[in-house]
Image (cartoon, rainbow, N blue to C red; front, side, top):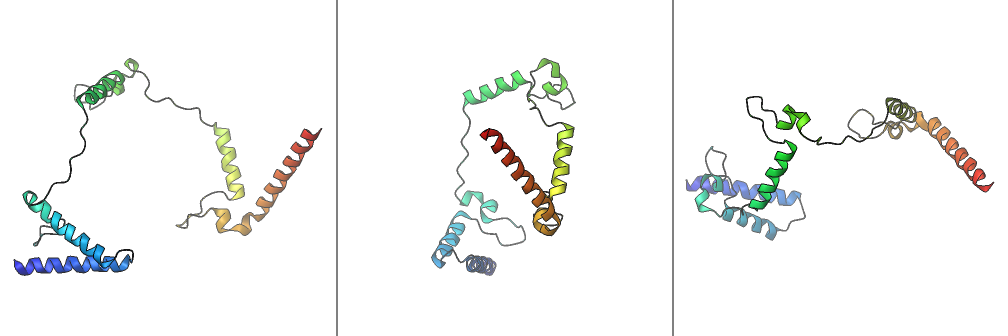
Length: 177
């Protein structure tokens, strides 16, 4: 058992040392402090084939993590009242549906849908994106087509720039008159 503990400790120390070398941000003292903290809290693997950490295998020997802050009784009551009002509770029976799903006419609409674009607007935007190469290229680069193949879209970019310049000059001349 002593040999197994020593072996596990040496393996962990070597792993932490390799990590510290790879992350040149930590000093040797910081790594030693982290190892000491891991040993103190039982956050090291136990010997054997269980794959559990010491604090999982022997929870009574190590300090417990602080418990999450619990909600108050008033908060729970408020959440329940809101769920009852919106029908966000499981209906009786075996359906597994919520009340607002089973009887939608009894409860207010939960989600207000914002007005979107028309089909024609979406098609026009897609055509413009295809024409200008403003679409993500295939592969893992994450570049747009006009960034990956600038020579293919130079003409479209030049045409777009000249149209923008013409519209700007036309707007400026209209304002001047």
